[in-house]
Length: 238
Image 1 (cartoon, rainbow, N blue to C red):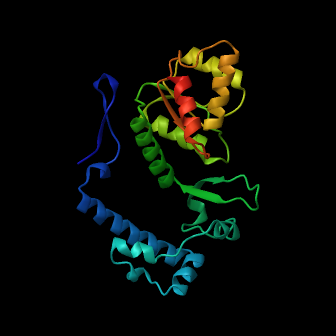
Image 2: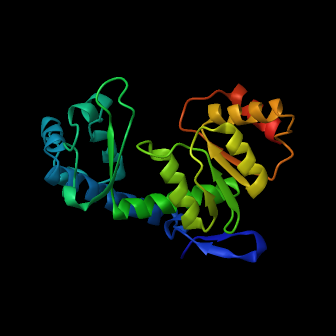
Image 3: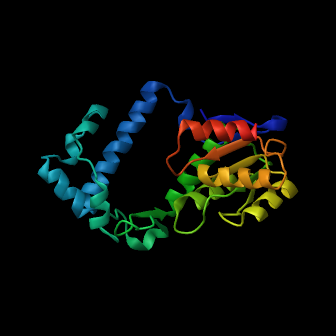
């Protein structure tokens, strides 16, 4: 059975088959994928193979979901020490994109994507947007940064996958952001909480009411933020 999302206007969009599985079916799928992942990294990634050997773990050791707790943790220092390609579990020629952290505290941490990864990522983000309230055919204003930061393109591909008109503004140039929001009439706004607050405060300085725009939903994150800031954003945008 496939998962159906009912959008405004009576349109439906099929995204994930797995979201309507029973608990037993879901656990069976999770175990199958866990075993596959363990086997893959054991065979293809020397770093993880040695980790497993040190913990006396073989791929065959994973028999139930409870065995997940037997697997060793990966530390952020491990990601840095294996820079740039030490953790790859596929041939490098299969990669279609590389993202990294800023690297301000040392070597950047790297995330690699195959085409299949991009497709899966797009589906997951599309699902998240529908959960937040977004619908196919609406406009999404994406103020997450594009580039090596993974967030901007992640939201972009998910919105496109959902069938939204996506405005790839990225961060910065706040007055232009406000102008595009007023002109294009997006229903969904995405960005880091601190930058969304910056947009709100700039609107207020311009004599505009942030609550009197076309915006209906916000997807904010990618940085730590407090409940106080959450309440502030809600109060000013609602």
